[in-house]
Image 1 (cartoon, rainbow, N blue to C red):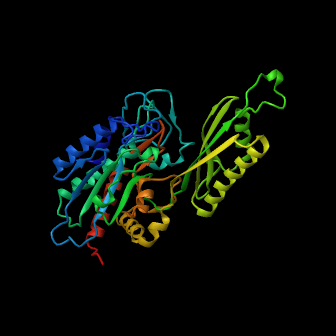
Image 2: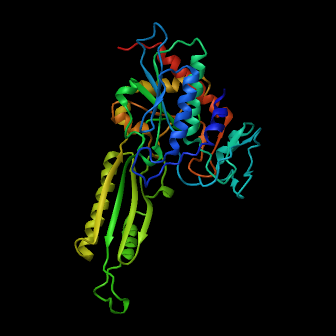
Image 3: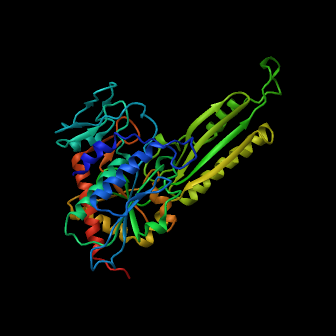
Length: 409
């Protein structure tokens, strides 16, 4: 079975994670896909395939006889999707021999526009996969799952010699909890790759340092007719905080290695208000400076309006995995070699976000990220190509071959 055929079936199982639910998994629907994957893995001959009580799926393909001393290589993808644009059933649509022009979705009136997505011209002649335009597609990261499963099937049905291959599918990656209960010791891989990136051939090992920052504002609400010298409008204080941040350091104004402050939620009234930010930067020093800037703003507001008006809470989310990958740079060199051997130009670029691999790298499992062949994730414009998925499978297969001939030191 080809990877895209698996994807078409996996995306029909809706698996949005929920930031509001603090249990793991955050949505019980993820178990439906997990159990399906376990059944499929067992059918392929992965005898130890299982899902644990936290909805983590694990399985191993034993090393070929005589290759037990090759590194154990892991491949990881996540089962959950974002929760936005998931209200309707997901209907994947194939557009064969795509002409590289604007594509009007079957439903909803949306247009996949070549001006907004200029890479589309490079996909001309391929078979494009989208949703019907009313939902996400779910290729993030069910494409990664489909490619890993297809790689596993190809390995098991061939005579390609290999070391031990470790497979894992995680819940709740989209809400930053995918590594919370990952059994690194039980997984028993020496190194791993997440398959959770964009275009085929992408290799990512530098991600943001990340935190969440929450400003909680306590106002003083009295009748506006007699408010002079008494009222503190919490909503207005929130607006003032936002304007004190560098207006050029937002997601829509930055790219590459540039960090940002992103206001993701604001609510409140004159009495109370809350602003929730995510803060990102690849550079650790600049990241620390951003956090210091937030603290200075909170202090300034308390000096202006009175102590206790503003409470700032900062919670670290993940760190830049580059410091853990650089000592194992063979992971990047071999990924580049695998791409080149398959006739694909590798593209090493920073992740403007994070992956399970970022946290797993700090948990003792060096784990860069590879592309799946997909684009425009997290919205109704999400798309991927059949050919890109096939190429991604070829890259995974080539990595297995490369690490199969390496011996542990």
